[in-house]
Amino acid sequence: MKGTSQRPDVHYPLITNGLDYLIDVADRLTAEPAGLPDPRALKYAVLHLQAATEVLLKARLQDEHWTLVFKKPETATRTAFDNADFESCTTDEAFTRLTQITGLDLPDKALAAVKKLARDRNALQHYAFTAPAGAVEARAADVLNFLLPFIADHLLPRLDTEQRHDADLMLAAVRGKLARIEAYLKKRRNELRTELKDVTDRTVTCPECEERGTLVLGGDLPNCRFCLKTWDSPEEAVQEYTWQLYGMPDQPHLPGHGDDEVLICPDCEAEALIPAVTAAAPDTPRILCFSCGTDFTDTAFTLCEGGCARPLPADSAELLCPECATLAFNRI
Image (cartoon, rainbow, N blue to C red; front, side, top):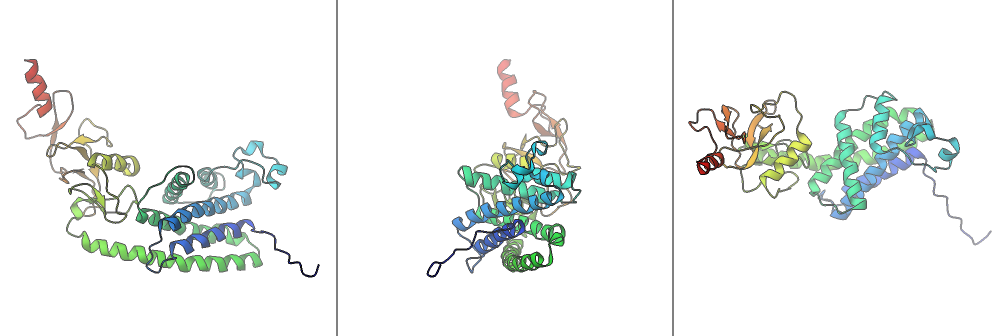
């Protein structure tokens, strides 16, 4: 009818929907010329990047077979699928099904990045969320660097000519923005290499942003120079390090202890002594104190005979640590 304007339908085919989320993520991460998005931009970048990841992983899963996107494929019905009226699998489950059922060779590092992104999204959407801006940016870049080749290798070849053309245009926009994000991150890393060159023997991988050789030990409190997180205590930094980053093969250990146990430092008395990898020796784990930064790798240890199993230098004449010695004296 004349004088009436018809609004177009909201129409986002599956791949287009995922790519549109990615464009929004890239826009938010590069909105500021200096490459420093504000907290609100980072919030929605995380939310939309998680949405893009979920849509695109499930698009490939659905292409294998539509039942695979159901949380319980054995309960799938075509009617429920066509009406989008069902509970779908999680992003982690989609990733696992793509490797175990579809047979895609997806890197473990990508799964770790996707899991961290899901954790951040869950906190942002349902709870309170606090994280260093640099860590959020680095995680986003990791997921984008996984998704772009995933799309090119596993989604684009399955599109028809018209869909492929539209997807290529959208991807070009994302790649251009990602180059700016990576240029900023590269600049930060180059600056830090110069800043930290004299303390590489006491810098380790940060458990928050997972940048190698940026968590500096031996100062007032452990702090990451990349994402700028400072821990409230060395013990807290140790707990996060062992929980998130431990598990490298052939780590050194102290006699009578599991590799991931935290021990008391013989020098500073902090419960912060563990095997860790430094920037100076990335292929040779060291035994470091996260409080004072002392390297005990070349120190032979014996254990306190008072029952606490605290490490003592093997050349020490003492058989008991100070606390056990005091207890033994008081019992006399």
